[in-house]
Length: 283
Image 1: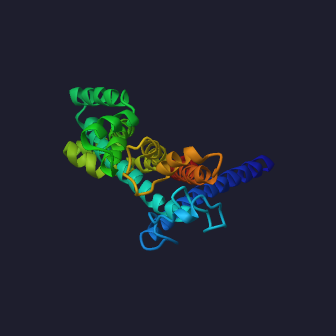
Image 2 (image 1 turned 90 degrees about the vertical axis):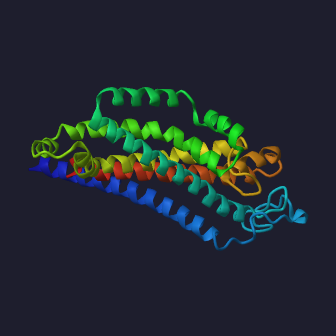
Image 3 (image 1 turned 135 degrees about the vertical axis):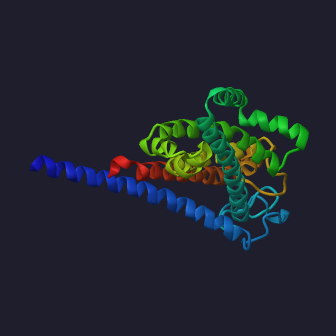
């Protein structure tokens, strides 16, 4: 009786810790999304407005977070950069998840040469890091939001294709799929009605985790000048612009760095929390 009671207590505490992780991650991402949406209609100052007379002002001396080398308000740039960084990451992951999931589910249904060909294509894409892909695309398309989204999405497609293929293959061995095949349902019908709904949890969890990676990749692309063209602010470009002034104005690097770290932490915690929430063993 005592052992059973202790097990129940440990299970309850473990469940609470998982809920805290999920709620914390959701709260962080919710706050960032709210800031990003707010920046579309209001910022303390126009993010691109230059006031040279007020350049390199420290936090609280001029504005809450000070100004940069051109006298632009850092808080306004962080808010606008939040929208640009999140929108690029979310768009890229959405495209990668959609295309990769369709490819993975199709390969699980068709099998054979299509599955083998898909895996080899994924291997080739994995051999090209997103930074290198963006440099190649930038040479043809020029730097910009479309280039960043395309480069990140191209890397996400094989990631989701492999995850979806593995999950779909497991689903095809389940009894409910065998029953659907026995009554004469086509592979397309089974994939859409039975396989996809039962692996959607895994896709959702993986998308949340990959969003953190997409934020880091977008920051790296912007840092290299392959992201959104200036004067549109992004967190990565703010980091790049701050390198010359690290000794004189360290807040120019610290603040966008903290914003990137917070976003990655939030998405990782959200993904881990969703994974634990969808885990059938928790019941």
